[in-house]
Image (cartoon, rainbow, N blue to C red; front, side):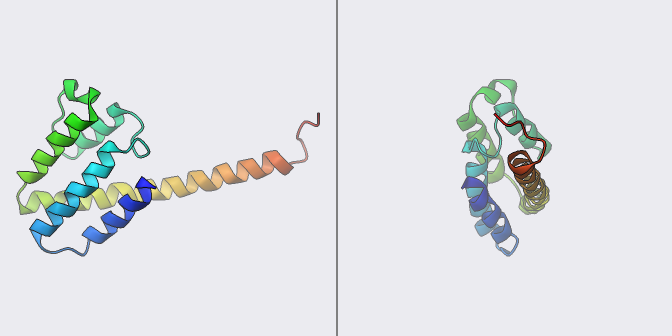
Length: 125
């Protein structure tokens, strides 16, 4: 559920030209991104992602998602126009790649399920 909303929001921000409106949408994207356990299962993965975007996360913040959220929102609030556009591009790049991988994984899992269920070499009990 959260992933679908996130993908829609990331597509939506590509059309926004006003920086203040763009910041508001990026706030909501990062709120979903950080608080959802569906997207980043562990806090370490989330912290690594935020650091890759240039958001400094101290080790003590890795234990607390709401702390990481506060740090990220403060970072976004202090960003200039170029940094906001850079964040927008980074989000689009990262989550298009993730969506493709997720689709591939779902197809592979589905095919494995079908082969296991209806395959000739299954164990009969």
